[in-house]
Image (tube, rainbow, N blue to C red; front, top):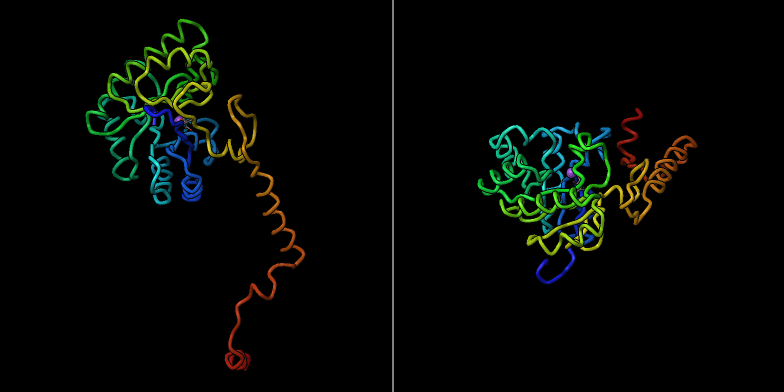
Length: 267
Ligand code: KIV
Ligand code: NA
């Protein structure tokens, strides 16, 4: 798709219904993102989500998905310690959850080594540079990256290093559009952007953000394509009202019993 200039569409999914929806909508790549920590598990950040929780979400998505490429997001703490830790974690995403590939954050020497080790073990790896939420606290919080010439150059070097160790694609997150436009011609593998402007080979958004299923402030780059929160509240609210008014269930929601059986029961 990069070669032919066809834009790559990627979204996140965390469970069976979201997987069914995104496949039916015709996306190319599905990420079981550690953003699920916040969107579906209610943690304050992505740092808290555990490996078992990520695997449970990935398995549910796998059961709902056939055609799109399925990428599992390695959660914080599941790959940093050693190459051995990274490889055994990645193997679980592939073998137990049926992911096609894994994604790790960061483009520094540590992430490069871990990516290379997983690739050597035969696992396709997607990189992720720019804003990397798992380690955002160390860089002053959730804010755009590469806003100085030096920082932008570092992102370029990280992207090239991840390419050199064999990553098949990269995420560019929260990078000035002009920086992305300068870096893109230097990168041979597909780059999928989120808050990185229009020059990337594709775009990714979080399922709950684009459908208006989240609460609280939205990042600058989010475009909300639907507002599903209100209709869902309305639906449950209507159910609650009808139950309280004894308007539900109605006759056609009820099961019958043969009159002879009913007579026998009454005697
Ligand atoms: O976890 C996630 O949703 C992500 C995407 C924003 C790339 O990492
Ligand atoms: Na993520």
